Picture 1 (cartoon, rainbow, N blue to C red):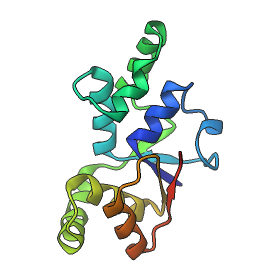
Picture 2 (cartoon, rainbow, N blue to C red):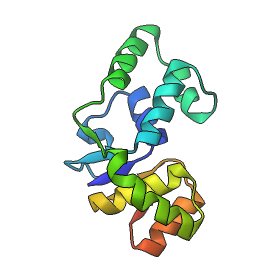
Picture 3 (spheres, rainbow, N blue to C red):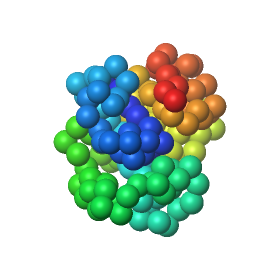
Picture 4 (cartoon, rainbow, N blue to C red):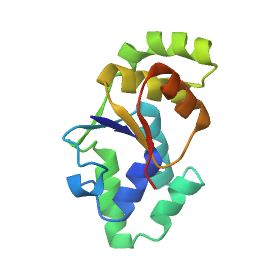
Length: 141
């Protein structure tokens, strides 16, 4: 099981999809967080700027509608844990490691799933907390 960030998903979607050969290690189970899925959705909707939005800038208009359908309906290939189950542990972790919501959700979701954290965008707070908690953290460029 791997937990992937929005940057990694955006890069894969913009270059052809989320097939098993496009994800590191071709795992059978892939998850992301609610926060990362929201940022990805907002970037495609055009409500955000930045690196994620740039992944979609060069996508052909015809392919863009396919991306919008993919984002609108979470692909079966990706799972997301319910925040109702994560928030109590997130609050404790955030207080212990001085994390924001996004970082706390990523680390707790990885713990609950027993997943490696695989990211395209290195986030020192997530990396450091994952290391302290014994969660593998991999940077996939």
